[in-house]
Structure formats: C-alpha cells, structure tokens
Length: 138
Picture 1 (tube, helix red, strand yellow):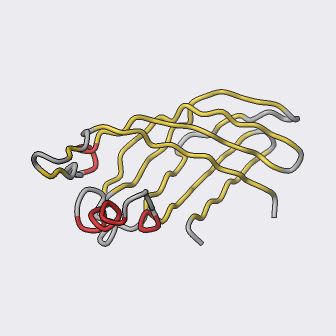
Picture 2 (cartoon, one colour):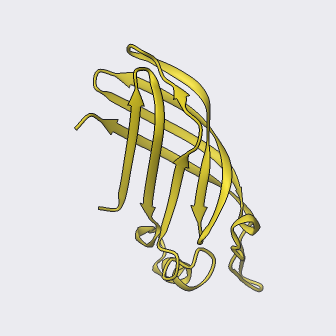
C-alpha cells in the first residue's frame, strides 16, 4: 500500500490520527523530474515516507455533517519532525469520515534544499502540504 492511516475516536472526538505516505511513489509528467527527487530535494531514496500525527483531539460532527477547523499535529518530512497546523474540513456520512486539509511548508524547516538547475529550473523554497483522507470503520 502507498499510504496507511489510522483514526481513533471517542464519541464525537478524534483522539488520535496517524497517516503515513510513501513519497517514493510520487509521479509527475516527467520521469527525469521523478528521478531527480530520489537524490535531491525530497531525497525519497533516503526519506521515503512522510507522516502526519495529530497531537490535539478534534471534535467532529456527531451526525452527518461538515466541520471546518484546524488540526494540530506534527509533520515528519525528510527525516525532520515539525509542528504543523492544518486547516481542514471533515465530513461525516454514515460510518465514514472524509477529511481534506492543507498547511504551508517551508522546505528549510525540514532540511530540504530545493532542487535547481541553473538557467533551466528553480524550485520555490515554500510549498503546501495537502491531504485528502477517507476513514471507514473496519
């Protein structure tokens, strides 16, 4: 599996969440770009996974509905763990919860040197961490 996630709830409160993503599976429209990420920038050969871990509980709708809030947690990227606040929207429908969210990421905070090829391409030193998660009861 490319991703693995777990959500623990107590009533209408999410008490724990951990999501791990296999970054070495990232694909773009250029194989050269994908190959470059293995040894520079994200260095997916050395740091193949990114993990988000919730550090503060979140209240979710008790019935079907949508809740917009901020998830407070940590993001581990490039072998470095930093606190992160993810603006997110959770939708509960039946036995499932869909979560979408995003947060700004400064590459330097995670020890990432943006890859560049002088005169050809330069990568910005900031980006956005985005997630779209679907949780269902086992």
